[in-house]
Amino acid sequence: DAMVIQNPRYQVTQFGKPVTLSCSQTLNHNVMYWYQQKSSQAPKLLFHYYDKDFNNEADTPDNFQSRRPNTSFCFLDIRSPGLGDAAMYLCATSRVSFEYQETQYFGPGTRLLVL
Amino acid sequence: QKEVEQNSGPLSVPEGAIASLNCTYSDRGSQSFFWYRQYSGKSPELIMFIYSNGDKEDGRFTAQLNKASQYVSLLIRDSQPSDSATYLCAVKKGSTLGRLYFGRGTQLTVWP
Image 1 (cartoon, chains in turn brown, green):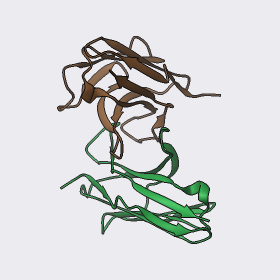
Image 2 (cartoon, each protein chain N blue to C red; image 1 turned 180 degrees about the horizontal axis):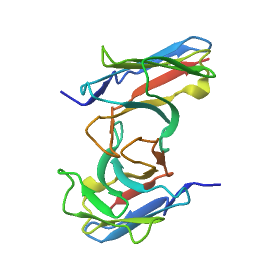
Image 3 (cartoon, chains in turn green, red; image 1 turned 90 degrees about the vertical axis):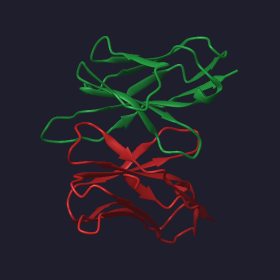
């Protein structure tokens, strides 16, 4: 089945220790997104790739970086995690053109715990 | 003013009742509207989308859109305890490409 896969599902890291979260998709969607979601809050868009074009949200901290080496994969790098970065990280994909906006499909998420 | 606003609830309804979830948005040029359901600790899953004014029905779910009032709602008929979740409203603004704006969600509890 076509889907969005995130690894790992749970990640525990130490304060300041870099961590990488991964996302892959078999939907052949051209747009991939990374969201941060904390308890009882809306998903907060960190950045998205429209094909290879990287779009950073203005309020995304410099501590967060992303890579999209090919259509199927996207990575979220947190260079120096702080306690405030503990959250659920959601990857989503969508097929988008100037003519239409299709639904975003979410992966299962990675829950990050920072000790 | 927030892009998308929802009453955070919690909304509590008895089993079998109709649950009504509401969402307002600020950009009059918004084009596409989505409802996602999110169970605790899980990722959002799509319930419905609507593009045109009026009602759109899918099983027990009905989405209603009124662009003049900048209002979109989700009705859940014959509510079940398994419907207990947070419901997120998401909107595509007219000027954006590929980006959705999410509300904070409304927490729904259906009690037996």
